[in-house]
Image (cartoon, rainbow, N blue to C red; front, side):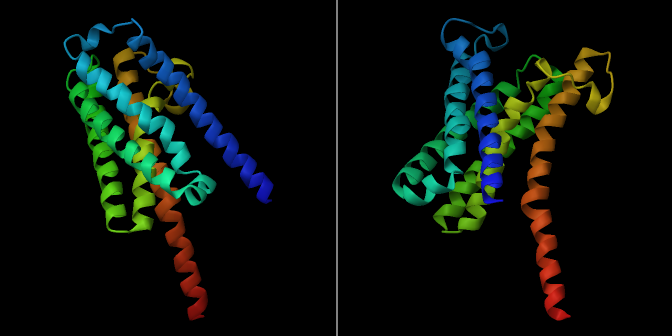
Length: 212
């Protein structure tokens, strides 16, 4: 059973890392090596700041959640955590700026609050650990990493047909806006259900059994 859980976790994290790497190469690395997106003309500084900061979020995040590394290499965990938080805050602030000039006007209304949530959850993760509140720190780190991944998830429409989720949408702009909202909010909602809602039900169940 333990091996099965370990294998499942390995597959999960490997899939996230591969997906993040593919997204980063297609949307960031090509930019740094010559490709330029006209949507960000005049805002190259913000775009470069975003993709460099996002590298810290996407590739240090999984390592921070790796329990064996977190417990055996505490000094590394703390250093990587500081780099993650610093990079994520830069990425979030830059994303906030870029959301205001994003080519898909309707998408700005989801990218803007997502950027705020990214900044807020990352800042609260830092604040929680300064208060030595380990539980809150872990929870806000999960939320922060989920916000970082949301920027990856919204690109899934390019490779995966999304019609099975909400049917066929003929208008491409409406379809894009729906996808932006779906993958900006849905991952955070799933995280809250798994991390907060479900454990709270188990706690109530335990208390009820003791009372009986």
